[in-house]
Amino acid sequence: MNASKMLLLSPPPTSLLPPQRNHSSILFRRVSPHAPLKVFAMAKESSERDTTTAEKAAIVGGLVSTPVIGWSLYTLKTTGCGLPPGPGGSVGALEGVSYLVVVGIVAWSLYTKSKTGSGLPNGPFGLLGAVEGLSYLSLLAIVVVFGLQFLQQGSIPGPLPSDQCFG
Image (cartoon, rainbow, N blue to C red):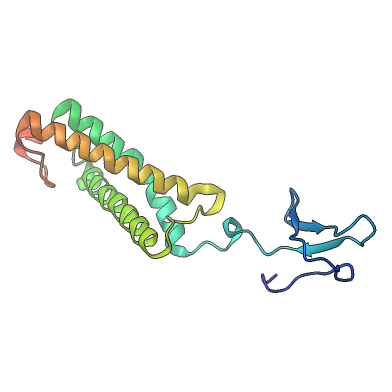
């Protein structure tokens, strides 16, 4: 139902009192004890809107990427090296793509914040909002662990496996 369409179940009241919100998505308003009750049907809540393909991709990508980054940062902090390349370089590739996904989600969030004044929408079950928050936390962890690595080792590992780590 469009936000401009309302379902009116009683004649219009004589007073212009604002409607009171009930626990459901229907508004009830009584002008006086003797006036009939007015019922308005509400449009869908913003969290119930259709999810775009980009939002779905961000949810899936973020839910996969943030644990991979956690594993990567733990491995970097404990061994001084990133994740091993894995079979055919698949683990290393997943690690690299995960960093890009998290940076992309944070960039999208900042862009949306600058244009609309608020971050990404919550998405279905609040998952996009959760992924947005996890991405910011992952970015903070990246900055902290990379900073500690640089202070302790004098450098951070490059994007390609080195002989020092996996020789």
